[in-house]
Each structure stands twice: as structure tokens, then as C-alpha cells.
Length: 446
Image (cartoon, rainbow, N blue to C red; front, side, top):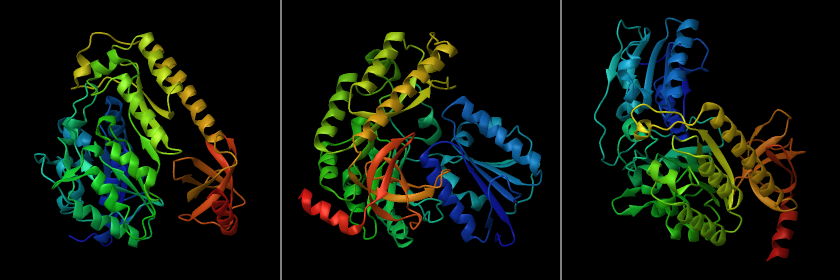
């Protein structure tokens, strides 16, 4: 059945990979003739791409379903993705859900909607997740940003004790290299200048003898692609050769987000992480040494069941006294089905809240200090939206978030050189540098 005359809305819960997958799903509906409307507006079909990284994510998904039904009880609702994979039985008990599609088939959700008519009971599509390389028959050109996420990998074999993702997304598998290149070239043809590589454990990418480094090098050679950015990547999967290539390349962004999770060796062992504190610090020090001006971010979990006060202080110490620029701080939330759920110890909620507050403050101080290092320097920025203050914003190659003054003439998706003049809140303030001035600066530096 064609979607002509029908409308569809979408909501994404969770990670950047989910965002990339929703963009792909949106394209299938648009290509089938559906009118795409904003979530919350009346629509014939509503697709909720779910997350299950915490119990709270599950609760939020169920609340969203009920919200849609309150506003428009006739909407055909499909829940797809991670929570659909692990919680299909729970979801099927909610009146009003019509379709539940697990991880393996989520990108093909449109194929399971014969006609968007409410059902007495939901249809459940739950195929076995394979480990075989995969392809994606569509390209996510319908992306509301100047930077395009591109999925290169799915699943994970690492089995950290706090993580449910291997059960929700299966074991590690990689996308066929020619298929990634096809989508990347299509995105370039559609005007995207930056690619962001997404997956669950992207550093484990492997296809017919080609490694993650081989893939990155291939993507940087695509005409029209001027920046390739690596998202979160596990520390034990980054080859030193990647750092050398990053230092040499004008296309691969000098930015890495490497999850630490804890600065305590005891907690890292309890988390079943594959490195210790010393190994992590030595690697990021090597990255900072080899790649000029590299910005390194991390993830830290506070309140893990076995985290003592000293363990927490060890995490603070790594963030404050290493090359790390910022941390995404996550408060530990017990996840049903994970190994960490079996620990008898528990950190009181008020302690977790205070530890989170402290780490957030340290992170903001670290980021501000890093931004201030660049005052007076010129960086390249890809322009994006206008913020609430009316300033055009964007990110530098090394992920400094910039707000541009006197840039009314600029639109989004322009690569410009700017001079950083100060720091205000979450932004580095900057002025656009003329091409002639930038050329003179380059000649002087060389």
C-alpha cells in the first residue's frame, strides 16, 4: 500500500545511532509518499524508535505511547528498536500499540504496515539477530542538520556488567564497506560536508579484511566530504596508526570521545571493562602528544553499586589531571538483566546526585579552560543553527562549540575560518575571518 495521502511522525529515544537509524526510516516513509509531520502533530502513523539503556528509558517510551494516544487515539503506533527487542511482552500489554519491531528488522518497519489501521492486538516482529555483515538499502538524506550520521556497525561483544545493549542489539557485526561508501557518496551529493561515524562499538569494524582505519581512510577520500568525525569509540579498539592518520589528515577531525566510565581500577574490574586506569591515561596522553590540538571527551558513570567515595575521587582526578576536555556524566541506574544488578551494594540516591553535580562542575571547568586556550587563534567551523541569542553557531574541526558574531550573511552548512575572541557559557565566541586574512595568516605561520 502506498502512503500517498497519509502522514507519519517520528520520535527518537537514546543515542546518536538511534538518530541515524530514524533518519533512514524517515526516508523510507517519505519515499513511499507519506507526508512527514512533527511529533505531536496529528498523524496517521507514529514511529517511536526506542532505547533501553536504563529502566527510565523504558518508562519514557511507555509514557510517549500514552501521550500520542491521548492526543490522537486513532494513530497507528509502531515501537521499534532496543526496547522493542527486550520488552516486547511488556509493550504488548499497552492498549493502543499496533506494531512492535525488534532490532533486526527496525529499518524495514514500513514493510510490516500493510494498512495503518488500529489493531486489537499488536503485531510483533522479532527475527533472530545475525552476526553477518549487513547492508542498508537507503541513504539518510532527510537529516535536519548539516552533519550526517552514517551507521557503520551494530552490536557489541564486550559484555560490560552495567550494559544491556548486547542483549538489545546483539553481537558485533559490520556493514559492508561498499554499502557504506555508496551512502557516503549519496550524502555528499546531497550537500553534506561532514560525516559522523556511528555504531555501538565502531572500533571493532571489520569487513573482508578491511579494518576501521581502512574505512576511515576511504571515507576521507570522497569528493565533497570535507570532514569525517568519529563518535564514541572504545579505548581498546583504537589503533595507534589512527592517531598518526588523524595528525596528518585535513579531513579526519582531531576529536575523540573515549569512554572512561570510572577512574577506579576496582570499579573498572566490577564493570568488566577491558583496561585499567593507567592504560587509559597513557593512551589519551599518547593521543594528545601525537595529534596537535586534539579534543578528547569521555563518559563517566557515577554511583555504580561498588563505587566508594575514594573510587569517585579517582574519577574526578582523571578528569581534572589528564588531557580530557569534558565528560558526559551518567548517574548509574539499575538495569534489569545486567550483571551489575546482582551486586549487593548500593550508593544512596542523594550521594549519586551530589557526585554527579561535582563531576558536571569539573567538566564545565575543564571545557572552559580548553576553550580559553584558543582565544586569539583561528579555527575552521561548519555553520549550523542560530541560537536563542541570534548568533550563528557551529563546531570547529576539534569540536569547539562556536557562536559567531556579525555573521548574518552566513547560512547553515558553510565552512568558514573564524577567530576565537572569548568564552561565554557553553560557547567560544568568534568573528569570521576573511579569506584574504586567513591566507595571510597561513603564509605567516608557514
